[in-house]
Image (cartoon, rainbow, N blue to C red; front, top):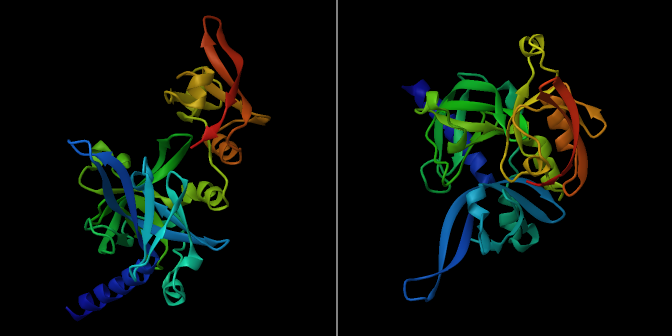
Length: 314
């Protein structure tokens, strides 16, 4: 019992230290009641301070916290509220100089882990709002890591864990070093793991977060796909990225790219795998047009077709 209490005491300490990086993001949406009177609907979400740059705290939060919000306020642990500016769909900035000096010293920037090293059985701490209330804590372990999961414009790892979480309020998972390894989301839960918490792992998104932190937008192509395997190549399919879906309304969809196309070139770069394509998208700026060449199957076999795609911000 003493050993168990000692272990939980250590985990609680890790969570309390991580909680110094957590803020409450309050979004306000203007609406009207049934009599036509103006009312404001508000919601509270957890946010994690992931950087301090140019006199601002940059806060990583859930898209629902800022989507269609008319106003954003960030509340710190001492109760100080500061109006926030939406940088991207999942990032809010607040001027750090507006905080009292003592409170500013208490705010900790949450370090981002190398989530590729996370394995089944690793101990994890949930911070943010795992109970549905911001500044709550939970403990658990990783149970499974799914690799090469298709997401829009890339592949990622999904971490399944035996840990309490609340994805509506926001839950961030940290390791025993106090570094964020991922954030929970209902959208990445699989049908075979409905009884586990599912989380996106942070390392796959570091290039995007770095661009957002530097004030640049992340480019969006809008395809789901997979590598053309050796077995597929053996059946006559060209090497490249096999498009399983062009997301409706995305730049790829609007340009005419279709499911079944094989992306073989992006700009001047030959594409042999999804990692190649993902790297090129991440290094591209939104608002530019890029040539994307695909191999499309017809009656006489595969023909290379160039498309001019106007990339947009995510």
